Length: 284
Image (cartoon, rainbow, N blue to C red; front, side):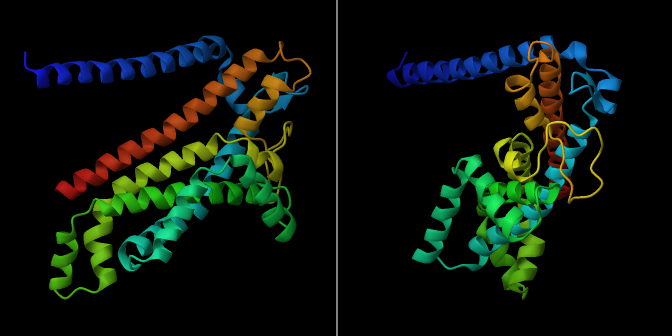
């Protein structure tokens, strides 16, 4: 066996081992949550209001609150993020100002979520007078998701060959016509992947909504975006660490975690299906 083949053999097996370890750990975690929470999952658990300090009833307000906040996050983060990415990649010149902006965006991606929560309190709750509400929490999560969306969208735009742009411009199209017809349709699947990953992260965050609108026990659905709300991640945090009867509600906490995982999975599954159809249309 040649020396190069030996390196390739050990390299590939090392990569397979790393993948196997990660998959094994994920399976162990999921099995633990599934085995301890699946027995509590029922139609009543998903559709009823909480009762008796959340020791009875269901988690419908938490599911609805999480969906509402994630929706507002997407409405705020996706258009601004994609627009910023288009400007940086297609219009902005390569200068030190542009490089500084990109560096700032990437640094913002690593800022702890609790910092965004405190900033959201100052900006949306106090300055804009939105109060502790779904709107304040959604906008705060939108700010947190924005750097992810910009970075993922810009990377998707960079994968489009320059020939697509040059061919369109050579035929007399304007810059925006070229972007709209020859760049965006091919970049959307990649943009969609990064956007859904950012929204999935936002749906599972606790710290930003802790300060901006989440409540532990609200036995009613929110009437508007200006109301406080229940959310699955904050609900899970309280049930696991702060509840007055942690042992009694432990199965509810595991079931809540399972519902949150299922919600994130459905979001990613929807993105995969949509991305597949978009790519299929491009091929046709």
